[in-house]
Length: 113
Length: 113
Image (cartoon, rainbow over the protein chains, first blue to last red):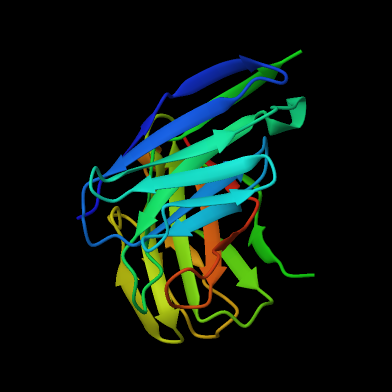
């Protein structure tokens, strides 16, 4: 089955700096890659996603890049703010009727003032 | 408001005492899923359901049961809980197919003594 590795497990940045979280996946058939943000005491919430036919996608301060050849994808957060502090999960999915997601192990991002 | 509602949010029980965690969604989603979240392991899928009366095992199904008698409800049943089932549990729902957003509940923190 699919295996998703995520690094780093913790990341501390100063407010205004950029943060990058990286994930690799094992199954070349995976074609959908969402990123979820989990705030304390809440469930994960989708923040951005990318499909395998696209190399990069951006939404304001958040961007995701995908390298299918190397089987890795990354989340980029620019101009970080304290409210970006949370746990971030990457995931991979093989398309079709099933919506099964395989998640990475999570990155705890701390944005310091 | 689109919601996935889990109950209870917190539960402390003892080994062997059967329990049920309820999950309900109001978005008429066909696909529902249960995950457990453990430190350093991310979210792992326990069971999922593609529609009413259609359920299947995820990655860590041992010790759990589910049922899908109605489209909106997907309860998780622990017939004989053990301490290794102490975890944070999330229910999620989505429409089937590639790229459909999974909406997560707020989580149920279970402690089995």
